[in-house]
Length: 148
Image 1 (cartoon, rainbow, N blue to C red):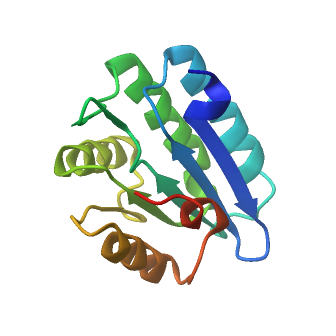
Image 2 (tube, one colour):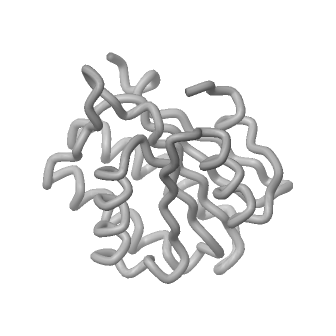
């Protein structure tokens, strides 16, 4: 699968939300490309101004959640450390309880757990609404374009 199908990024300047979707396992090279795109998108905002909405609901293979390799986790932790000053809040939509635990662990390791909240619910609409409420938004073009 091409990188463009695995990783999609959207910037809503009016709502000050940077959102992205991960749809498949990311290689180290994919993760580095994603990091560059995220850093570029977030750099356009002032410190403490941007909300992140991360959609990992599609990260399933053969009915099982994808767990990032340690090398990929390191890239995500570094990305989070670099963008932390820009963040107001960060919401992560997860595909399973296991992924929620992984995202919470990465947030603690990178130091952004004070502004990040991971969401998991058997009902994807409930999970999405909880994340939107957390960020103070009612919609997001990228997340709303996908049905899970």
